[in-house]
Length: 60
Image 1 (tube, rainbow, N blue to C red):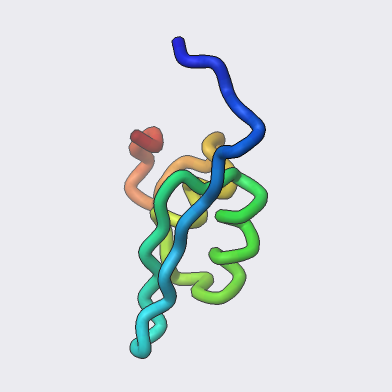
Image 2: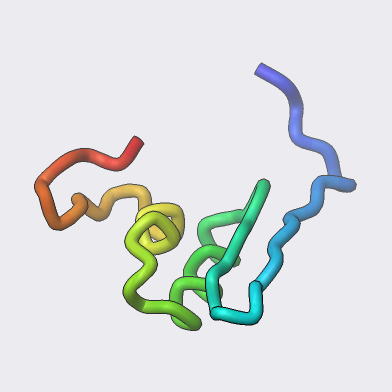
């Protein structure tokens, strides 16, 4: 397991249509981004990994 360093960063891009592409984000950042698009279920799962999806599958 790699040690975390202080220089880690998150990357995200909000496209003109509102779609959000994100990489290396924390659950806190995912929560903020999920508020921009409440229908984005993958982002909601990233915001709270304990949430079970609508079809009762555990998040991957």
